[in-house]
Image (tube, rainbow, N blue to C red; front, side, top):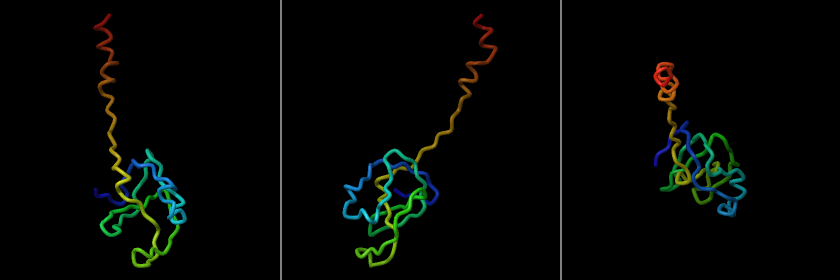
Length: 106
């Protein structure tokens, strides 16, 4: 799944410090299942696409397994889905309240 900067996403997996116990220093801030976030950055670690979130920041640390460069940890995109925003259309309810229909019933 492809995400882009500025996109709203929903966390669909509860990430916990138990699952990230060996990286607890790198991930003091974890997303919460059901919460909405905004994609701040995208990247790929090997073949795993990942994102960073606008609403939370984690420490910048050296990542030995990825060449020793300094970077903030990111989250696997599999833990998120795009937010589907539906526009609310209340026209059907407005029609139900029209005065013409009220007079028909009387």
